[in-house]
Amino acid sequence: MTLPSSGNSISLGQIANEFGFTASPQTKLGDYRTIANGSNYPQSIGALSFSSIDGGGSVPTSGQIKLSDFYGTQLQQVVNFWSSGAGGFRLGARDRYNNNGMISGNNEVAVVGGYRGRPSDSSGTKVHIHVNQDIGSERNDPDHCALRTGSWNGSTTLQVDVGGSGRIIGAGGNGGSGSQGSGGAGGFGSSGLGIQYSETQVNIASGGIISCGFGGGGGGGGGFDYDHKSWRYASGGSGGGGAGLPLGQGGTGGHSNGSSATSLSEGGEGGGGFNNGNESIGGTGGHGGDSEQATGDGGGGFGNETSNQNPGGAKGNDGAAFKKASGITFGNSEISNSGSIFDGANARINGNLGDGVQ
Image 1 (cartoon, rainbow, N blue to C red):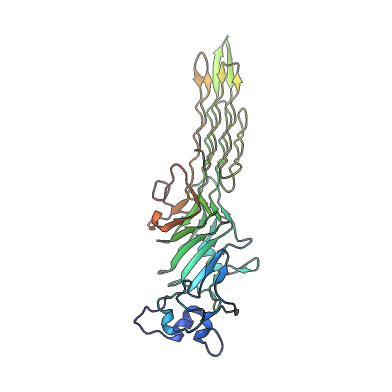
Image 2 (cartoon, helix red, strand yellow):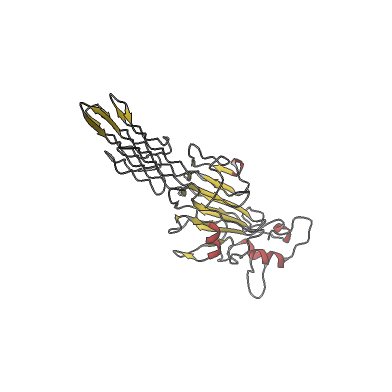
């Protein structure tokens, strides 16, 4: 736990309990000036750099060192979502901390200084959830988050650090089906980062991304017309897939399929409806949402003389870049953004889609 503040007594034993024992049979205060492997600070863990064992430079890395230099310092830990193989889908930071295994030769939890392993109880320590890989989600439920912080022991200082190659992105919704009748609804996108611990600080470096998954476009409805004692029918086109990770797939069915999303900024195009001699025309499928264009409803069909048409399908709801669990305190003041945040039209931190994490 965090060491005593200035004005209180502090001992080498308290320091060793916090940062680890440096040698057997006797810990030396001067050992804390360097990393356990003998290297000098700064210590790099992923894209993060720690200037000293306390992370903030209070503890000297050369020259004289005193017990009082450790007043108010705390153990620094890094949960590994930064190394090769550390990304994936629907991940939990507390789960990885508890597992405390290895990923491609790297620890799932790295401790700054390296004089000890991670404590099972995180109280009084600072935990960095460091993301420098791709993390995606699963589609059709805005409450499904790509990465969840999890719950932590009281008085833990929790920080999510997204590096320049880190992306936390909800899944894109699939496009709705085109139809001769009513168009099918587009699939929902899901969400990026789920906050389950109050006052979590989020830092996004240049190049880093936290994004919702965007909804799929609605399918186009069919048109029909009675002309010269015969019916003319026209099916609508399917909706485009929404941007996300994974990318939303274009809808199928109807006159023409919608296209799949190709990137976070390129949702899929809706398929065109059938034109039956300009007497009945199927509706065009809606565009899949992306970071530059809103998700679209499917167009309704058209019938000439009798004006008969079926409605297009509703667009799928976007997820949210951030979701917070019920009762958790988190807002814009906890976000430091030098990268990119892409949010859906109806998804805001404290909005209708802001609460709820799965």
